[in-house]
Amino acid sequence: MNDRVRIDVDGGIARVALDRPEKRNALDFPMFKAIVGAQKQLRKQPGLRVVILSGNGPDFCSGLDIKSVMGDRRAAIKLMWKWLPWQANLAQEVNVGWRRLPVPVIVALQGRCWGGGLQIALGGDFRIADSDASLSVMEGKWGLIPDMGGTLALRDIMARDQALKLAMTAETLSARQALELGLVTSVSDELENSCLELAEILKQRSPDALAAAKRLYLKSWGGTGRVLARESFYQLRVLAGANQRIATRRARGKEADYQEPGRW
Image (cartoon, rainbow, N blue to C red; front, side, top):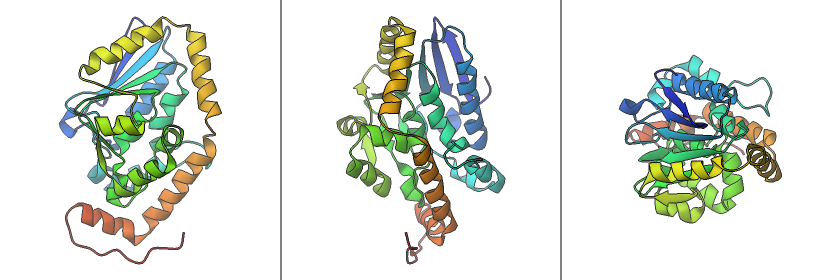
């Protein structure tokens, strides 16, 4: 498709790969746009039955390319901008767009699946992790909150206290730990084969039944708009405060003391 995302469709199965391996598939602004572009292309793909989303190279996605995105104020504004609070902005669309596809989306996780990478993966219907994968809600390390739509999935698949712990601590989990928490669907030593086996099983089912089941379960497990609005509102408040900049300094190994927190 372009130099950030690759799409290959064969026999109704679309193989979509994040393709920035030299940067561990870190998310810069072109990557955000390419993922959303891939989602739009797949919605128009005739005969599509299943999507397998993966990352080229040793890692699925190491998260936000902090230097690239934060160093470009216009790109950061474009990521956060939305016309209406309950709509998805560009940052959230890379998660929500997979939920809107009327076909099952299987996410293959290997290596690092951190921060924004995990937010993308949470948009899939199934997450199969390599036994050596590591997962983290990494935003807390940078003084941020997860604001790319992953809250929708975390609400559905995890206990609130466990999700809150991950968001607050930025703890890195092994694949087995993630499985115990319900963050991934399964763990496999043969990641590609496991994803293809599930895709082939799903291909044998009625596409109408799959589409209806996906929509039914997403709608029955709670709404979308208010969650997206809250994510954006609180992230903007965090970004406006001095403590987020201090957290960034600390994450880069520089000494800095946090200020008194604002009133929440």
